[in-house]
Image (tube, rainbow, N blue to C red; front, side, top):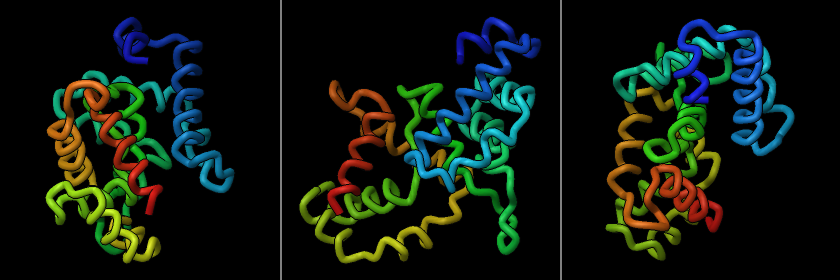
Length: 185
């Protein structure tokens, strides 16, 4: 997708736009773990809008600019929370994870919760998992429900700082390891 954007810039043909929309739908399906009730938004974004969002993410000069480009899409952060006036950015991180797995990983309530526990216990996995097991999933979902683009970018920066030599050399590898730990809980 990044190469396509670099090739077509802001003047994509219909096939490139269609490819972008299909990719967005596939990313939503992956993120939703194929739960049909959660796979309804990506397809509602017209191909030209999807292309514009991907284009903005590729040319964005900062992490926040890349996030905001994707957040313009329905289901990826376009809606504003009525109470706080903020937009949810977590799902947008999944798109950037597929565009740039070296530098981006998905941020969601599970990865936020387990990384928080790891931080509290100075990286001790056993203590972090034990602590996380005492938390209710519903409480964690609520606590990490509204995470804006600045918070997501901060979390992704933490992923980058946690990278090591193989097998955890990409931010996406860190995210997958955190998600895996969260599944143990």
